[in-house]
Amino acid sequence: LAAALALLVWRLPGPARALPGKWPIQRMTNFSGDILLGALFPVHERNATYECGRIQDEGVQQLEALLYTLQKINNDSALLPGVTLGVLALDSCDSTAYALEQSLDFVKGFIARSSMGFSCADGSSPAYRSGAFDRVVGVIGGQSSAVSIQLANLLRLFRVPQVSYQSTSPTLSNKDKFGYFFRTVPSDVNQAHAILELLRAFRWTYVSVVYSDTDYGNKGYDKLQELAARYRICLSNPQSIPGDHFAEADYDAVLRSLTHKSNARVVVVFTDKRTARSLMRAAWRRRDRFVWIGSDAWSGLESVAQGHEEIVEGAITVSPMVQSLQGFDQYFNQLTPDNNVLDPWFPEYWEEKFQCRLPEFQVISARQAYRGLKSTKVDFRFYAGYRGLQFVRDAAYAFAHALHDLQRDRCGAQHQGLCPAMDKGIQGHTLKRYLEKVAFKG
Image (cartoon, rainbow, N blue to C red):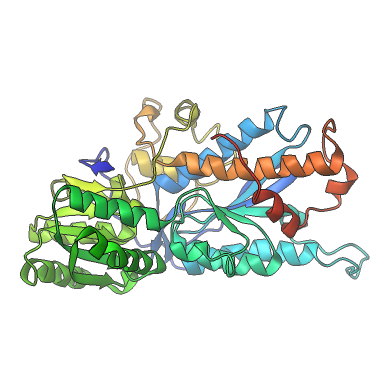
């Protein structure tokens, strides 16, 4: 259990209206390797008007955690000897529609890879974007359960394994529907038990519930409802929030209902971070005070508390057990727009974080135009570390160990690099079988 206290470190301006036709800008991280993974991270927030909103800490740090981990894997001579692991990483904007649109690049690569026996008019083999996407053998992501479900439905058609680092919906545990899906975090079934144990421990037996009208929220509420009687907890006045279709007045109505239709002063908020932020903002406008019990999707996030810390203060949120990613702080602290050539979103992140303008970064972004120029005196060590980066690390290591075992079986225990049996292609159903047997200490 983690207490969500005052989390504000910087005050960031609100999102600006992006220029029509120029936003969002499609970018990609291309970290080369002998074997490639695909990846999706919510580098930008979801935006109902422009698909992608402002850049966000968690997506950037998750991407950097993957790049950091891949460098460690490639420098480990005992793991995948002689073989480097790379990644093509895309931005999901925390949106199911945009994530699917971005994932079409992977699909086109899978189609090109499966076009054996076909040739182009000039006699060459079919390839998409110079063949880079043709070499993707598995995908890391998404973050939210909604994105992962849509991605899993797509990837299973091509038998491509997928490992998520944060999707917790029980729906994804259905191996008949999601046989190629894996994750490095526990299901929400465990989270529901933890929330109810907490309520029982404090003798809060009569509570209200607010949940997102998404697979994550609906399944979470269903599990709470299913288990509540066992813990002698009464769930009162459930409020379902459909996210993008809710305006400020709608959130105010939810708060009025919580205030007037129930005597419960404890509210379980089983929502995504965007909905939780809007709910807290509404409570701040109305000066309503509750004891908030939060789910893992918004646990400890600065963006949820920012600007209305006095409302969020004292909230108790649950999350899977987290640990620091050893060495990552030092790695991340030394990154600058000048030395970070792998992350195409990093200059925009720098501008957002330090409210400055990099003259050499001539790209439209979803933010206001900041005053001032680049400052060389900014201490970048004041970044707010994102919790749970070890789950991204574990996803990368799951693929690395599965591929290592495949290399050993196909090429021999002493072989260095890719042998012909691996070089001709790694089939998804084969890699899935090795992923199912992976075991390593994180």
